[in-house]
Amino acid sequence: MALIMQEVSTEQQIEIPEEVRDILRQWRPTPLYRARRLEKVLDTPARIYYKWEGVSPVGSHKPNTSVPQAYYNKQEGITQLATETGAGQWGSALAMACAFFGMHCKVYMVRVSYDQKPYRRGLIENYGATVTASPSQETEAGRAILAEHPDSTGSLGIAISEAVEAAVTHPGTKYALGSVLNHVLLHQTVIGIEAIEQMEMAQDYPDVIVGCTGGGSNFAGIAFPFIGRKLRGEQDVRVVAIEPAACPSLTKGKFAYDFGDTAHLTPLVKMHTLGSTFVPPGFHAGGLRYHGMAPLVSHLLDQGQIQATSVDQTETFAAGVQFARAEGILPAPEANHAVAGAVREALRCKEEGVSRSILFNLCGHGHFDLQAYMDYHADKLIAYHYPEDEIAMALAGLPSI
Image: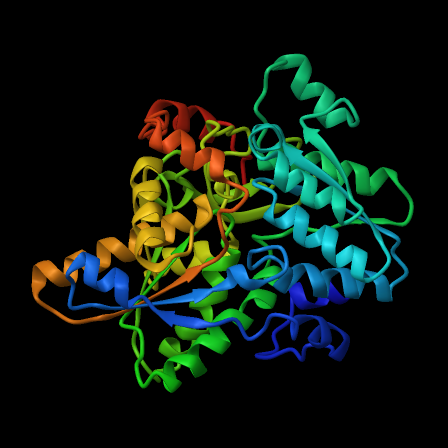
């Protein structure tokens, strides 16, 4: 109930409980770095900064919301949380948070990531959680998908259906979501709140903020506090959302009411969507393989407050490798989209002969994604753009509202 109240809250700020703060202090505040070596490699007059969320115990930004979600559920007597995960960052974060508060965690991991990322799955299991490849035979939703598509690679929409069904059918269990919803975005704004103070320490302020977008949580985390300042007339900033060309909800989706999951167990949400039946190809950025975008992010795009663009996975991995060789940090495939966006902006500064300050959120490390990088170096990755006709087919199934 506490999370539901946050979902619909009209308060400008919500206090972080002290028990949650005690845990977040283990890695927060996360560092803000200036990418001087990358600037030199790109020969750009731009000033590039990145907020480094990979220093959390699970290596991503996801614990910023998994810890408070587990805390509030524990306060209300819940003994188990069920959830989905794409690449595994959210699954490992919620598993860790449940371990902290003495709860069990049930994770439905999208099949393509379950197969591609066995070490991320192993991390989840080491925190004491149970991991099942989705779609599975454990739920009605999973069995229905497998009956029609026995070789399904899965999707976040399908995994959400299974997790919601598990929560509904098991007493003492609640469902937890790692992105999209308002309270999740709220928890992640700790990133941007810190970044504002850190940019002040650096005596600089971003002209451009870049963030990768799948469901919208890490993008909102870095950008929303700055957008708030902009809307209050305090300081202007241009904000760019970068999404995968293989799952282009913002750039090719429709702003409409849709279900958040494939089996239509969730409430209808107004968001940029590719249709709840949309199953993206098995590209390596598993955390971005979701058919919809956070309602608040969608609303900002609709209002013209942010921009959106897409990149294919070959460009993102090229940017990730370039970043690793310049700065020493190997980003997660999802984070590579933000890196690619920042590189584009920096090269634009070079072309225009203008010095701008660029800030992006490096939302996680790629230590469990080395197979993806090996595939990239072996030229096994393709620059996939989802076909317009298939998007049109998926959108044809939108509910009539």
